[in-house]
Image (cartoon, rainbow, N blue to C red; front, side, top):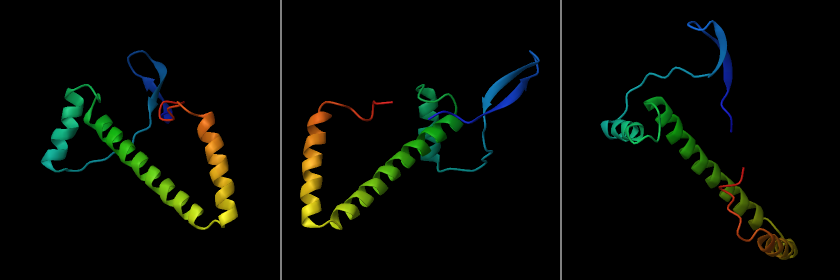
Length: 108
């Protein structure tokens, strides 16, 4: 997923540059959360507290998206007829054999 970018002017060089579009957020957090975010910066996992917040939010959103997909998938299969379940199971078996060994979290 690429960053949204806007054109900005580098005042020293007088040239156009691409920079991420950022929304201003001013807030307070619990001390333990601030320590966690600054630890991410200190360990090199993020270049700033803002980037650490972005990374944590991205991780939580990914978890929530997977949970919603899991719930939707379960609801779909619960609504199927026995014949449709048998067909789905056959397709799943074929697909499983075809993708054996692939790591979908590492695929582009």
